[in-house]
Image (cartoon, rainbow, N blue to C red; front, side, top):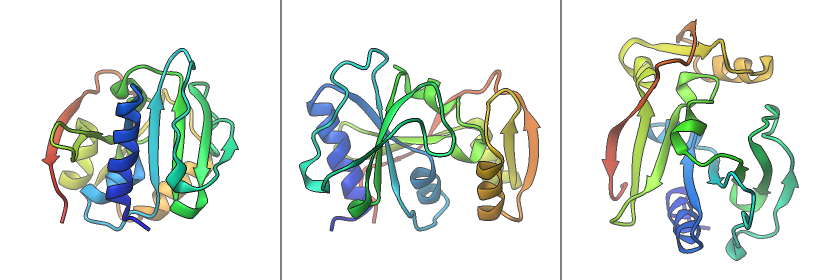
Length: 184
């Protein structure tokens, strides 16, 4: 089986060839940026009109379809394809903008993404609030984004020594923090 970095490249390239906007988001990107070993890969495919959203991923087996976004049922998720054999989830969103999606994640530690760059590698982006974890050990929870106690508990379990603070998402923005063409 291919490593997750190459799977991300394969899937994002397939999306680009098919004319679909897609990116890697959340935990895989977060763990890569923090030097941890990612456990699974979440690819977000964006299409506010839900027309022709499906990617054809013959290399990953047959997907199981879910509605919503796991435990966090979100109105902007059309459906999810879960490829258990490859630890990949394809999340089809009723959105058109990557930053719009990432700004709706409920914690700062999840507000990061990677896109396919012109060289065929990944470019990484984070919110300004994401940087607070690496600089100050602070994780922000956003009061104006609906979440579940289960998700909060999982974040606190993964980051037990962090300081947790609450604020609204207003005024957040993303910056290109890393541009990596080939990961070793």
